[in-house]
Image 1 (tube, rainbow, N blue to C red):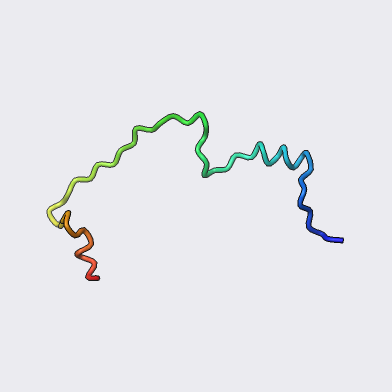
Image 2 (image 1 turned 180 degrees about the vertical axis):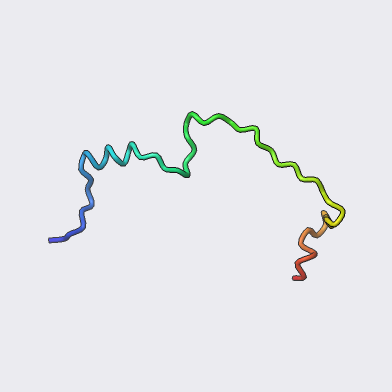
Length: 57
């Protein structure tokens, strides 16, 4: 006899189906208009050719 139960009761199935996980998007969630704007400072050294140049790898 084992102590591990694989099957679910009807109450457990219903609870599982009604559970809302916090990391899943809601079906009725509206699209957000959030945008990130970045303004380069004088000390920013942006190089399209090698953006990782400052990592000294």
